Length: 322
Image (cartoon, rainbow, N blue to C red; front, top):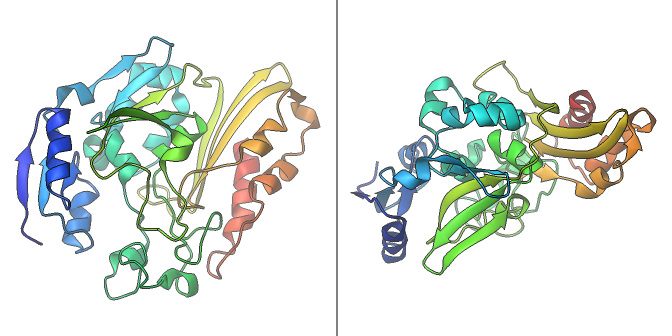
């Protein structure tokens, strides 16, 4: 493990200053992914900025518009077992509890969950080329062991997937990420927070280097009646998704007023197909061919050999979840 300095700060503004002053500094919350990356020699921060003393980031609070604000330092467990989340946003609770283990959920934070890195084995293996770890070195996964890799939104530079379960539900719920930096605060729609790999797979999100996440805000509508988080994985617990589906539906009798659906395990970010969703609005649910709907969501999907099976798996998972 590399040498690094450590500072514990209790103000958001102080964190901005520290990030600006030290280009290789990293913010640490729960540390459940960051410490692994340091130990694996993948990341080399010269300073760790511990923000766990910023109490304002540990709160779950109601918003004036009827929505819910989840502080960046609220643990995954505290979100999942929050009474208001369980009653108003059960899709989010279900997704969180499908991931990791109780021990990890007790430490992992909301902000850290959004910023966790891919679990692509080539990213962690410094003996192999990886554009995400070292720009222009190549993508070993494209012609390698790519069973867990992306089928949507890929590029010649990277076919890694985002590993989070929580983020798939947040994408379906159309959350907003609140961030703070030296230039002030800004709100990022969840669908714009994470990036597709393009030619810069080293950039997982649109968070600037000197910004920190302060909260994730949920809209008023949480779809508490008709929802499902379906996770297909190799074993029943403590495993990353081959394919996951977060779906929330608003029904009026047999009429489908709206549907929101996001996929995990298939792309560099939680995958939405809002155009396909819009086509189903206000239709009688008995008249909808969900097989056609699934095909529209997966339009352009491409396998790379070992992961070809993900395309039919994702289609069946979408239909099953609905």
